[in-house]
Image 1 (cartoon, rainbow, N blue to C red):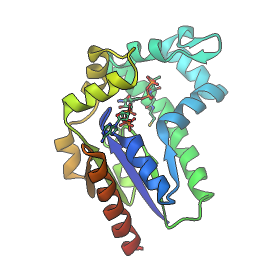
Image 2: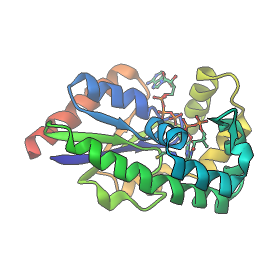
Image 3: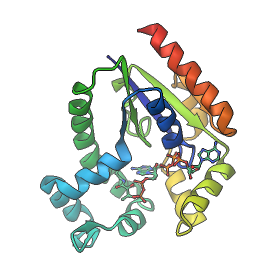
Image 4: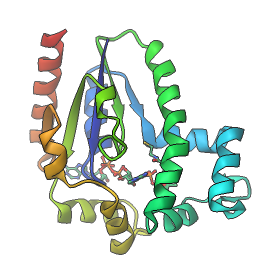
Length: 195
Ligand SMILES: CC(C)(COP(=O)(O)OP(=O)(O)OC[C@H]1O[C@@H](n2cnc3c(N)ncnc32)[C@H](O)[C@@H]1O)[C@@H](O)C(=O)NCCC(=O)NCCS
Ligand SMILES: Nc1ncnc2c1ncn2[C@@H]1O[C@H](COP(=O)(O)OP(=O)(O)OP(=O)(O)O)[C@@H](O)[C@H]1O
């Protein structure tokens, strides 16, 4: 089974593209969602996160995403430390999820792959791109509680598309949604031809 990493900067359209692959019957693991689930349920992770960020990281037993975001996206050391806690757990969870799949290939959608140096874990990588202004607009429209400053703080902790393009096998330019669908189908066919 081929393992494909699907990544892209904030608001590029990773989840939108991932859903298109799902519609083609490809199993997709959503790292953002699974990470949050693990951060909510795993006693080991909860203890490590509280030790790193304080008890305030959890409010009434739930991960306080606003508090955690404010802490880590303005402090590279804390973000690296949080990544180092969360990613091994996500990796383990992904591997056991993938073992349960029976398709030709599976996709792991993950916001950060190159940033944490995990690109060699995958057989190939799909990068989703869109212009920075479009990405900011999309995130603001999706959730009015986001601020430009908050989005840019996340962007600063992500590599530029130029750096990621060099090391990606497929680039999907996600602007016009119909053209995105065509590109997804092309990648899907190409991957199936390789198997
Ligand atoms: C800080 C948290 C609580 C914010 O939650 P929130 O619901 O607001 O955002 P969500 O997780 O849906 O991520 C949205 C986008 O933020 C950016 N982002 C998230 N985590 C990171 C990170 N570690 N580094 C850089 N950008 C990130 C990505 O573009 C991502 O697509 C959450 O992102 C988190 O716990 N991140 C650290 C753990 C992690 O790396 N999760 C991703 C799993 S691969
Ligand atoms: N081609 C497109 N045209 C118009 N809107 C789009 C397009 N692609 C995605 N969107 C919208 O932009 C928003 C962000 O898309 P999506 O959630 O897929 O991005 P993401 O990269 O997964 O985001 P995040 O970085 O927050 O995880 C969503 O509201 C989505 O519906």
